[in-house]
Length: 503
Image (cartoon, rainbow, N blue to C red; front, side):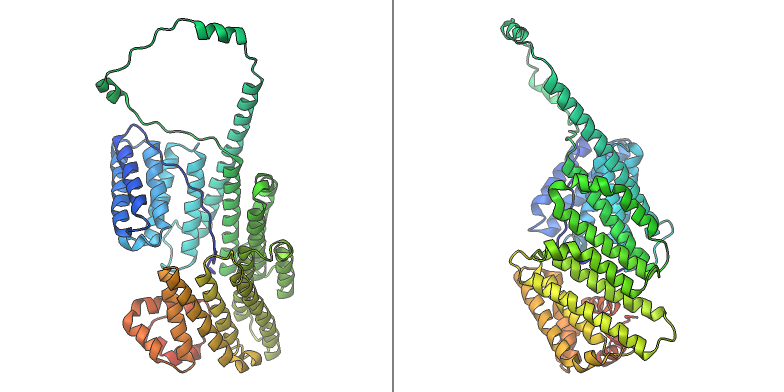
């Protein structure tokens, strides 16, 4: 599945729950201690988070029907899986944590299915696991973990969550109206205020200590929370379209039927967050168009028309918004990847056919580069290192069109210029990443810069990177090959195939 290159991401934060089980209180305290160290000392933070998980597990052994313990354990496992800085210290990879989090969420649901927060988190963790499995980074998925089934389960969780939230919002409104209309008897209030009252005796210190208990506080459901649910649901539908595109099988019509059923509620709940709604909708429609093309529901020209129609609102209203520009760039890059993937399936294509595809792909890669360049110039843009990395990738992809089997003449004649541009963008990305202490982006950019330099004839920097950190170099090269940035001739030139198993 194409990576979800999102440059900003919001996620619903659910409150911690405390109950009468002492393990719950101690676990929450450990969590809060871990959060204090999260930014400064990842290793120390992980120790506290691990202790919290141990306490929640111990509490569940004693109180297996404690919803709060089950909820907190499930929530914390998912939150840790989404913290790349903490994962190396946990000695568990993202896949392992997500599988545990899914099992824990299902256990919490077996205790109670009436918590909107739990249902929302369940949809989130199932979507994350389905996306990760779809990337194939951890090999074949185990039995019972088909991403298509996980996406369906996630959509069911989001739907039930939205239903409960709408019910609770309605009930809250009814209660509020009833209180507002309730008459007040001022004479009765005056009599009550002058009546003699006998104060209750205060409990002793020991009695007060014995009576102290933790209770779960249920916060009112808001329209904002309902909008979170609908936006997360449309995000799952978008990822599901991408899965069908890569698989090359399935029918996207039922996905669009799901979107159509929720469209009215989605619009109604996001009136105050219209830009978020618009961006999420454009991402979904672009992914749906890609699925339709990949599944041979329409041809490449129809795909272009659907993509243009989907992106029209962004071009008209949000041409100066960094997120909108990055989303449009991602859609163009997905277009290129899908056309390349589908063209491999077409047998007996002529050189004229390939050249027509080359012209179309070059046009869309250039559009992606233009969008990213525009986003990089805006003062409100965040994650500049990632944007510069993507600009370098665009130049490598355009250069790739000049190699076999595409052999696009314009790309071939411009190869040295495109390679130099890519090297410059990667170098800029590495510099920006160092300034922001973005370690992962700095390493990726530095290695890609060395690869571009090596392809231009300077093998020294590439060899230095190999000697210094061969494992990370291999990981970056694996992704580079998967993303289609290198041709077979490039791999032979770098001698990658002999030293790194990338195919």
